Length: 148
Length: 148
DNA sequence: TATTGTTAGTTACAAAATCAACTAATAGGC
DNA sequence: GCCTATTAGTTGATTTTGTAACTAACAATA
Image (cartoon, rainbow over all chains, first blue to last red; front, side, top):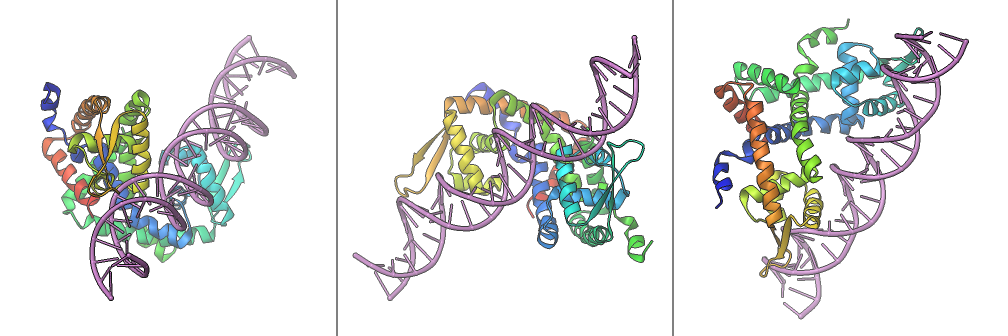
């Protein structure tokens, strides 16, 4: 064993934060993904856009871009698909004609509300693994990590 | 506002655990990804296989599959690319000729050691955002979420 | 020793993500 | 007004992933 090997005894892949975060994220996304994929044939990008519009009201692609930290091409394509399913409408801004205002239709809002209820139930189920204090701390720490 | 809307006041996308986990995972992967992508032209699947071989010694694709919770096609392709770069060798098992034993070459081991040091430093940097207790709790909770 | 089932790993094709280049509109000098 | 830079959003080419079907080897049973 070399010197460098010995110095490494404190490193453990199973504890490496980015790895651990990915594992947890992937595992926790799967069950919820089955719902929106199975029931609405949606992709992850699409439910994100749907939720952003449902939660924060009508906005432009760029605003979603910033809030959701998603690349604009992802959003562009998600919007196209959501529009094709008549889940949202686009309206050109009169003052700045580059900008489009996105808004959920009745159907889009119904899909959002239904998925939101499922999301809330699923979140409850996950969070029940921890105490209230732990859960609060977990969310705070994740927010901190996400916002770096 | 409908009844259903009002009932929803306690739901917040920004606190939805799967979403939050994904945001944190993505953010924390980025900086580290730049290293293995920039320096070795590796994909995430490749560094995972590299690390599993580096940490836990020679093993078969199926063993990595189980430990890393990666699909076997991902592993198959990652192994092909790592082999092409002479980072690992494959040896057919004499007793069961379906099985291949994977092992890092000198070059593979060198790459692993170098990346591992960077990973450790990066993990330290991230974890310094929290107290020791918080950090331990965070890892424990993430492990629990990942193992469901 | 056939027959059927299972396992290790690969390959082919379709779906999705990424990256760069693009159009159209606006804004800021000059 | 005219030139250049910037911004909103889209499109196309390439890369990567996901799904299913596949080959080869083994195991169990009759």
